[in-house]
Length: 316
Image 1 (cartoon, rainbow, N blue to C red):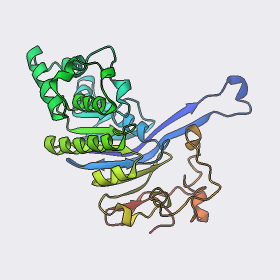
Image 2: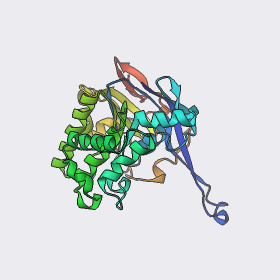
Image 3: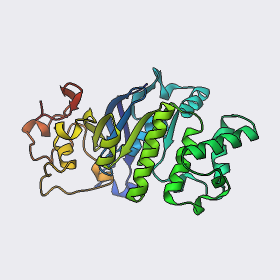
Image 4: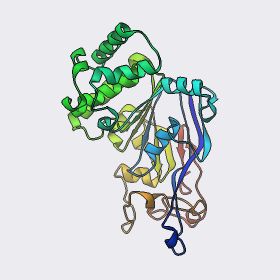
């Protein structure tokens, strides 16, 4: 259904012109050659620490920002070559669930108006039909239709996330791309939101890309899991056997099986991605098993066992 091939998204951080003589501009490789597929009805989990490029990947797949290179194909069609009407249809069929529901729900509108907006944009139904559709969707996400009269500020964090999910599902999408949908929620509410999302996924026959830094959440929900580090996918494996078969040193670090090198600084932000393309493995400075070639050659994602792909010179 969705095919991402060698996708790259780079940003240039420009210094003050007077400082460029001694400080060259930084090239941030937010996405650096990512490839994966999502089949119909599949849940693909994407995990990684903050700053690994997960959100930029989601935004690029949704065509909220343009790529530097690579392609995204949806049902065989190049997303970045779609005409305006086709792009509108793509955005109807592939819906986001953003991390911060607070910033995506207009505080000046009540919930009914927020949920009606996508129906108005796509010219679906009359006023009565839209009202009935919104009420039914609110009930599907375990909210009373009376919530249509409330403003986002009157809702709890879990209720706002349910409203965001209802908005995404109102257009009957084929795929959801959920970026940290349980972030900032207390554990009980986060579990309820995740269970609700998986139930709606089954009932509506959706494909789901679930992005998170919470390994337990992704491992529980996903059919396959992709691990990202500094803009690259370093491991891709089935969800059932993920913990037992994890082979990449970074994945094993996330699982608590082994440690990074003790002097490796845990940085977050632009410096996470300012490596050169020919510098070798992005994890080399932290890897306790690095080889000489790790400093000079970028490892490619290759199948090391059936259905299990690893980008590591020392595995396989």
